[in-house]
Amino acid sequence: MRKEDLRIVYMGTPDFAVEALRCLVEGGYNVVGVITMPDKPAGRGHKLQYSPVKQYALEHNLTLLQPEKLKDENFLDELRALKADLQIVVAFRMLPEVVWNMPRFGTFNLHASLLPQYRGAAPINWAVINGDTETGITTFFLQHAIDTGEVIQQVKIPIEDTDDVGIVHDKLMNLGGELVVETVDAIIDGTIKSTPQEEMEVVGDLRHAPKIFKDTCRIEWNQSTKKVYDFIRGLSPYPAAWTELKNGNGEVIVVKIFESEKIDEKHQFTSGTLVTDGKKYLKIATTDGFINIISLQLPSKKRMKIDDVLRGYQFGN
Image (cartoon, rainbow, N blue to C red; front, side, top):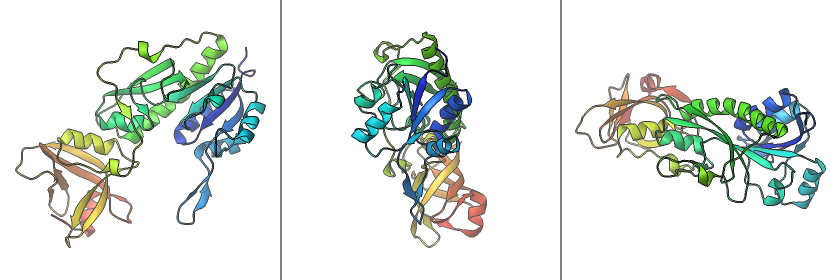
């Protein structure tokens, strides 16, 4: 079979999903349809905003579907009419069996972890939060339970101690485009092999990657410096770790922290105590040292470097 003859339906929504779609389109693969989430209101005017995948599909004149419900009969009829041989899912949503079991070659997913580790909605965040030194991407065939299908291919990358989740996201996004193409080529060539996740070697306990909410992002200072440091970079730049601090008037404000440094230094401060010279540095005590804040965001303000913040803002304890 030639790649032009394999009819592909692609499903995805955020930036992470655009790269693999771009690789397929620019590589000459036959993408006969794109499925993405319905437009959502955003900003103060609640203007409907296109998903990044929709924007790409429109720019390249690709057939586009945006179902509210994936079991809707009208949508299913439209999907069947595309006559896909293969469906590819990247950062979309859980599919019902009537959808993922439709094409003759099935449906495979690109997941941003080394399955079976980090099944769930936020694998990149949790790998960094947990201080992992390695992560990767996986293609696997969909089946009933989420993120449990047979693994096709995996690629590993290191997580550097200075990487935040944005850096790791972009590395995996670029590798993901390449891996999706490699997986499609293996299906076309008839060389595809897959391995049940139960047969894969796993070191230690399985870790999960549940969806992250605002409360998840609150910093607990009564931990080691490394744990707090990993937590901050595992949520930066989005959705961002936050804490409550007092301003110079003694009012409690919510501050988002984006960049920090570890300081290993014994002290007598209670965890969470703020230490600053009011000019150049602001650090917060942990159980075994300090977190030195490099950049943060005050309420209703933009992200700023700490010395710029301290020029016009005071903090207290």
